Amino acid sequence: MALWNDKTDPDAFPEQPQQPTLSPSACLSPRGLRAFLALSRHSTDDVLRQRLNSLESHKRVPLCTEYAQSTLFPAWKARSSAIEYCSSYAATLRTQLNDETEPEVQRIVQNEDLRLDPYAQRDLEVLKDSKSAQLTSLENWISNERTIETIVRDRSSDILRDVCGYEEAMTAFEKWGSSLRK
Image (cartoon, rainbow, N blue to C red):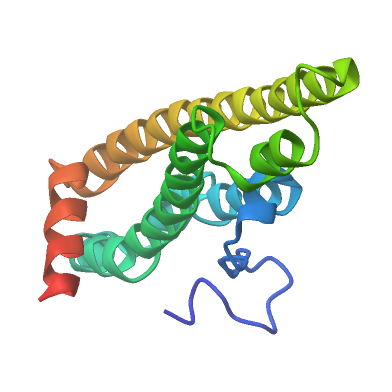
């Protein structure tokens, strides 16, 4: 598909960015993940109509399928895996927040008798409030990204249907994904 990413062409379409390393710290401070998601959407979905319109009309349908399977679907999968990784991490944090045996909570409880030291109880509440706020922020970010992803995919599916006659992009994406697992 050199047509779309010819390095010598100044008007070439942007290449798909590499997915950042997924880690709990990347989820808690998602600046890099946000940048990846935005760049990925820009380099694949936002320019989808232009890329497909640049195809020769008599070769459009096979090239549409090739583009979807080689570029669009892998981008969707990479974005989904980043969002789902952080969602899984948020679920773990939610469990830990409700668990009294979490190491930080145990440290406060074991080092200080909560009945004798009024500051230990306050420290425990501050810790829980801080973690709760961090978790709420993470869950809001995940919810927002899922909503954005749904909107972007729906729009891309409409473009694929309009330009290529590609009826069910989401069904094709699911089939493509399941073929990778075999």
